[in-house]
Image (cartoon, rainbow, N blue to C red; front, top):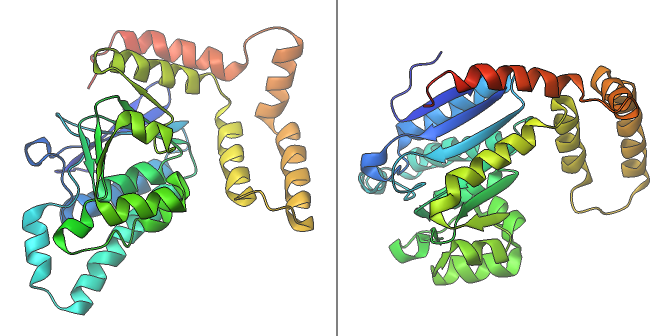
Length: 278
């Protein structure tokens, strides 16, 4: 396994990965090393065909405070081309996360500022605490949320993105749910229990069907109807019906039994109970 210093990557025997931002003493703020290590960790996740989905979390009180101030200070002293290289590295992280083949779930507590909203927006789903605090804070320090902006607009819509990018207002987990950044938000006291329920629910699903559905929805995009999209969707359902997991799922449904991937998950869950959690 890759040796990381700013992130942690844990693989659960039940078949999912948890990617932890691990600079709690810096409120999990990004620097060049963390961005590079996140890119490498995502490559490791992409290459592991055993994984069903990935959860991304932050150690400590906060999900991420955005960009590390010391790193930003160094960037201010760099020329245009070096800053462009930094921007391309951050863009690689965001695009790789958005294109990951397996489903992704962001779990947010405390602060999520600046680039952290990019990570959250790149994930397929996100949940958080009611009292989490979100902010597109870049304009307060004379910058713009440039690299993350396409993903934020996709997550919350153009109108809300304009408001929060231009005002740098902070907003709560409740508001984040209202505008679509979070799927759900919960009281802090029950958050870990709710996270476990989300994980358990995802583990019920066919791994290959989740991958196929993610590919399908990426192709569908905003749902504009075209002859090419119609053909793609027709082929997608035909392929999944004749796939091994598609066949197993249909047989299990008709025979009123659990499909094989749920039985495998149940066996792994028993062994998981005997192991200490990270």
